[in-house]
Image 1 (cartoon, helix red, strand yellow):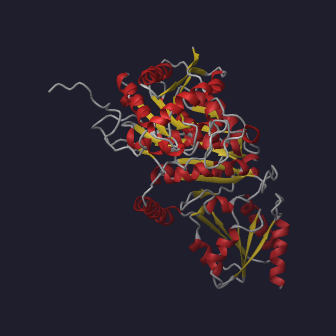
Image 2 (image 1 turned 120 degrees about the vertical axis):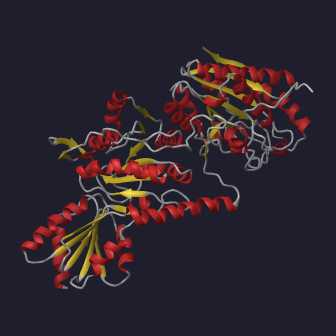
Image 3 (image 1 turned 90 degrees about the horizontal axis):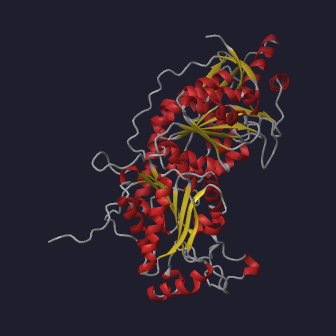
Length: 245
Length: 354
């Protein structure tokens, strides 16, 4: 029988721990497919974050390092500086990791034009620790640490990472995508490919922000989550290319 | 080779390069800025990489990444900066990565002072970061000794896949002394087949640098492995200088800069007919408990005096080693004031009169 589709070799056979309806699985697959299609599997080192993707080193079938919370861009910097421009180094980080505790590291990696690629999963909440408010949590959104809904006068408006990083000279490619429907998933894959291409061409820092879902901590079904992403997140976090050099 | 006048910070940087270190990540803090400054000039000349990180936190995590990718790598800082690195050091210990960290101690707590101190003994030897780990800690008493330690520090880090700290102070860092630095020649790094250099199927298992062990049994396997390694380090890597203790009436115990001052005090006391010895731990961890015990518990010794530029930190390990068999007094200043040889000699004379 002819094989018409195969799982990418850049993902292991380990069963993922992600919840049903979570966008991480989709994002993992897209990253794996891009690495495989670009022929980079043997040159790639990935850096896993602290957060729901903490076990990413079990799933990506490449050499991996697990970083302390927020420090993945610094760890990736160390790796890339040692292995050199031929290597492919990426970080995979959530919004608590990247947009809260790790803001210094991500901004400075972009500022240095560090030739690494970051896949940034924005699901507007802390997933692994049980649904606390993230810097990306929407105004009015209820979480376990914003039980009355996020109050912008108390803790600010949600942070827009792609817009912010696009202002930095060292950033070569910045795009925001979503994984809520097939069309957007196809666009997300193209964006991830462009980001890796920018790294391998030595252009500078690249990041793809992936709007993703967290049905468990949002208290919604998988289908409701995809709808909420489209109706609530995308209007605040517009999709598109923010930087391309 | 002719001796050369060199400042401690620059000398330790050059010694690291001669020991094969090719990656340095650091952040400015007084009194050790001469290290990153020297590295920024030298590393490009030897095909290495100096990178000024955005913080001490980032610097130690760059060290983590670089060590995980198989490089011989170091960072340096001074007390408040070392506090920031402690999270990373715990991760490096847990991920079984080799690296060298230089701490040119200054006064603390808090911002403290920029003068020399020995207030980081507890932090360096008792953990500092979280969890059940140890770090080999070398305490040089001269610029030359610090130079000579560097090759060994990197080799031991690689051998045991562990972070190693060189714990000096602002005086040793800023002092100029005539020194010799042996040109490195061929530094051969051990094979690091665990490093993340790119996974080629069939050549070796996939490399994962990690400190997360979510299952109790798995974490215990790691900590047992670390503890077994620490026992081996205690057996093979303990270093100590025992000086003038034969028939001594008193024994001083000190490390680093203070140990040198103690030697001057010993000479002064010798002239007054008082025989005093010195036991100087060169490794603060593993602590040379046996040598300290044997020097102090000897029949001729009346009492011991531990001298530190702190409110009394190493003295706890000295007392543990002596186990109540002899009295161990303490003398020191914790505000970055340096005890003088005359003050130390005076203390001994007072103990003799008492």
